[in-house]
Length: 497
Image 1 (cartoon, rainbow, N blue to C red):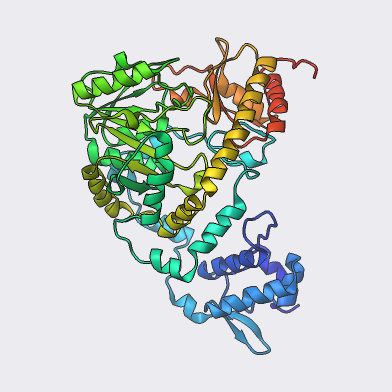
Image 2 (spheres, rainbow, N blue to C red):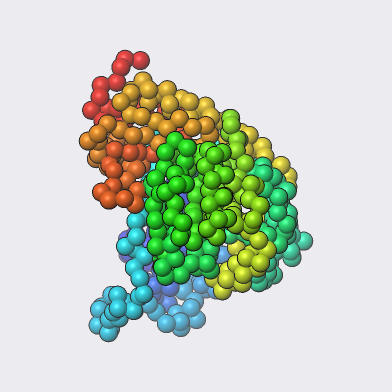
């Protein structure tokens, strides 16, 4: 058999899967390009014919023909009449990646001695990479594909790709943001939270975490004292410590952060007043006023994370920023819980002087978030799609939250839940002696994903009897069966239906 027809040598190069998010043609192109750049195909070696490769992969011959033709157009392959397709020798003139053997022989770099700190040593986020394949994903912060506004989002992206729109966003914007997005945040998002700001008081970020990182980089230094909730948002805690800050944990009760526990000498206070992370309790009106009064008296800066506050609650509260009369509150917002967490679109509202410095800092980090995404989100807001989505999500999540509370009461009555309106998760406290991590492992074997709550605590030893159940990614009809399975994993025998 000729080398050209011996398709066994190509078996390791192609991993075509119908479950991939890429088209079959794109997967074929990616496999060939990777093989070329990794020097796995010699210039003298002809690729299999389109017919043979199509038969091997189980795809239409036209799919392979189109893939080969595009690679020819891009210069990766050349077509030789009656001989087939070959690697373009010019592509192989670029330096090849060093082999594993070469790398072993190279002088090793002591990266540990070079780095100034070890980010990997900080608490890691909860990872649920296969949550979408789970039967009962009580995962926080993910989206429900059934509720995602696919048609509307596609419409906005198509509009953003129109010729005139491309001219608006394709140029380097340096440190500016899409003016339409700033206008929509100002007019559509902030008034819902009781915030009214000028355009020069708003900056777009790559989500809330990027916002917190920029604020910590700009405002904090080694020894800066930051007070925040304990339990609280673990990534915020890590971000502040990366900046060298000294983080002081303040306890949380049914009225939110205990403001009397905030040290007078704390320079910054980080809070999630609308829905506390992770218990979901709102900060009471009395505590809000006390927090603002303490900040003014002690010259403190408050960083308010509008955590899980995008939806319509039964008892909505305005942002702490809306009550601020001294300019001491910096508001951090995000669209992750409504549009999509993978979009990474957030914003900061702060005095114009501070926003100007944040723009200068951001320019050194990433210049600005991708302008095409900014324009697509701006169009999504301007066409009313976000308002409609918020109403749809609020209704769906309210039903799910009630169904989850009912199921917990029926099948896990010994677990206490936080009674709070709104939000996309429930915080549960189990009986003494409960190990939520062991429970999570047992539940995972039954296709139930839960999140142990110990990662939210800074105190030591960390309490182990807490867990968080998200409702944003699990359908209504799967909530009760999922809690029944969780109860079985916890060692309880669920009552008969």
